[in-house]
Amino acid sequence: MTTEKETATYVLIHGGGSSSWDWHLVEPELRRRGHDVIAVDLPIEDPENGIAEYADTVVAACEGRSNPVVVGHSFGGLVAPVVCTRVAAEMLVLVAGMIPRPGESPGEWWSATGHNDLGISFSTKEDENEVFYNGVREDLVAASAEHDREHSGKSWNEPVPLRAWPDVPTRYLLCRDDRCFPPAFTRSHVAERLGIVPDEIDGGHMVALGRPVELAERLDRYWTER
Image 1: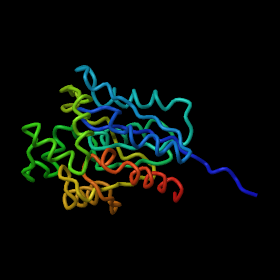
Image 2: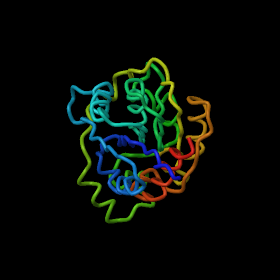
Image 3: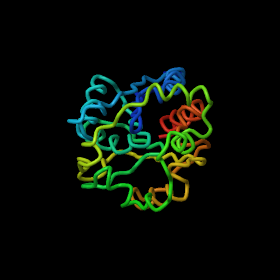
Image 4: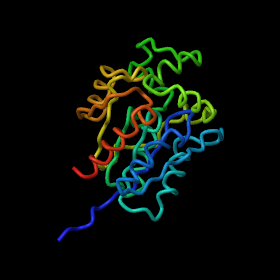
């Protein structure tokens, strides 16, 4: 007798200045594996919103869904653990994610972690493409520009509303070719703030666009091997 595979609801949180479009190639791959998927657009353009309001939006999207696995990419890593304090998440996964410390603002994160000392430049669009989009097809890089959004100042300056890390199984997926959060920096960051060894995947910072099938396979494997 065979039993139906238990499936998850993957709650996908995009990075800063971006949108749910970042996940559009991963979503069908997860659905093909039988899972439910929610890719949320954070309300980043409203200057009255910060991390708490972003988390409100994600929590509302989770209503009525079963077995949520909360996935935060890049800046979304600051939002994901806040969501996990408010929903009954089965797992928290950070993909090249920023890891918040209670009481720290996103703006403070860059100096507190030593990232500012790495000399990585985001000053021009060419710099951004070099840092974020290595390994992504040129047509997708071009299309991504249509989905860029302004990011409000409040979310950078207010402390992340997190008193302690949520009591949820947590995995971290490091991208081996990441030029934004280089592997050596990320291993140290994860060890310091989570006390775990990150898993690794080939690909650059925007791995959801560069290697969507491999990323979906890894996310599915986290669920089946939990």
